[in-house]
Image (cartoon, rainbow, N blue to C red; front, side):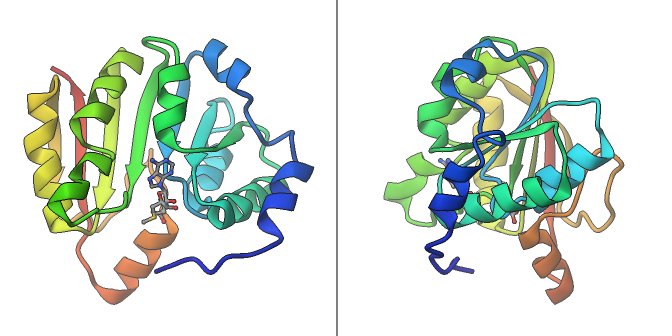
Length: 202
Ligand SMILES: C[S@@+](CC[C@H](N)C(=O)[O-])C[C@H]1O[C@@H](n2cnc3c(N)ncnc32)[C@H](O)[C@@H]1O
């Protein structure tokens, strides 16, 4: 599902600085819920609506997806969801140690070629950063349709300081602390099984 470029997206992002979290701000932020690869924003907006006392931060590197995400945040009126239109590689190093409660990885790009595995959001470089930024009782909640990425993540997480506390290869319900993403809606409609992991620090 490639997102067609929309010329309105970047101007829209620039016209809504109230949605953006500045780099200076993320350096100070504590006690928040981070989604990496927010896509068009269904998840972050639903979660911010459901849990108005929690702070949600989304990172999205694709300009068109980020534009849709900003628009959903603006039109929904939620005040507890902020975005960084950037690559997570640039953002995670700015985040304070032990400041994140939960990292959500929803239908992350699978990067099937072995030479691209290092770009996966569950590759060693990212997992090292997650271990640093998560609180001691923090979690990663990971959902994917992609079996290869799921199996890779099951292997990588324990090698990088995490313990798997829940593994489901047919996640067909929806837990209270969860929301359906755009990709998830589409996969569920097509009957594609959703794989889900919940992991904590080992
Ligand atoms: C397959 S889409 C899934 C979107 C959404 N989470 C969903 O489930 O519907 C993956 C998204 O992650 C974004 N993404 C991938 N790698 C990223 C990175 N390193 N930093 C920020 N965003 C990233 C992509 O631009 C894309 O919008």
